[in-house]
Image (cartoon, rainbow, N blue to C red; front, top):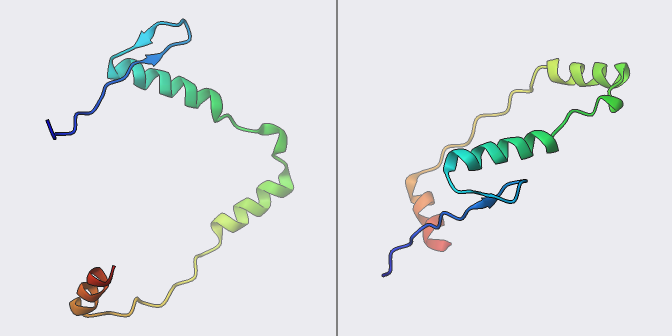
Length: 81
């Protein structure tokens, strides 16, 4: 009685039928995400692309190594929060 039981709710398809299997739901999500996330070719220009490529190709700065800390600091942090 206290166990959590996950529900398997159906999803409505475009033809008003219900997708009940996981495979049908995956296909619906795939189609939806494909329709939503499309490329915006109207905003691509050479100046923009050049600055993006320069930024991507620029080497990353090396950060300093993380300062080590003892396990007691971890324990104190856990107990405090």
